[in-house]
Length: 254
Image 1 (cartoon, rainbow, N blue to C red):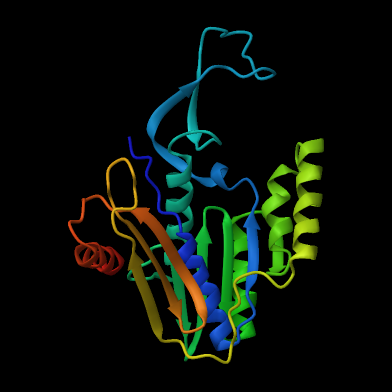
Image 2 (cartoon, one colour; image 1 turned 180 degrees about the vertical axis):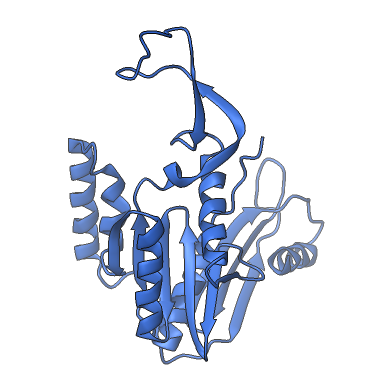
């Protein structure tokens, strides 16, 4: 059973936003409504007759699933393959490293599309490419949200709007109170900064009291733009601080 699906890493999204800020692009966002239902599965899957859809003449029969359902293991993969095929058939090509990045070039202009399950962000160098892409998506899918990436937090909470609870309302209010009080904290991606890669790596030595393993720490910048960071225990027991530093440097390079 094929259930694995490509999903954009958070580092890829930060890199996408960093590049957009460097180029001065406005980032747009769209959301596909009931995305998983567009995917078609290859395996044979059967479900019991759901309440309200029983066949009174054949109560012992089951339904054969043709399209993916939410909660089905194959749903994510089926949706990705459906979207990827649709974009590839309409002039896009995948990124060589990031398979969730789709690129379309047209007479010197470019449209970049980053996919995270059913949430899509994109940038462009020509307005006509944006209009064409919006029409392309509307022709195939139902879109529940489309516009500038301004209210990303609201979009992240939108999945709870169908069955909202009091706890969801409290969580949103608490989040907005935090953002209001800490408006100067965050990841800043300035436009007027070079785009060269700078990485830092460090480690302690035998700090873990139980197994005497060292801890690796590191972060990667595109000059002033923080893209990724990590902190984890090393898998080997270093015999010196120098060896611990070498292990840390090797893990960052890998």
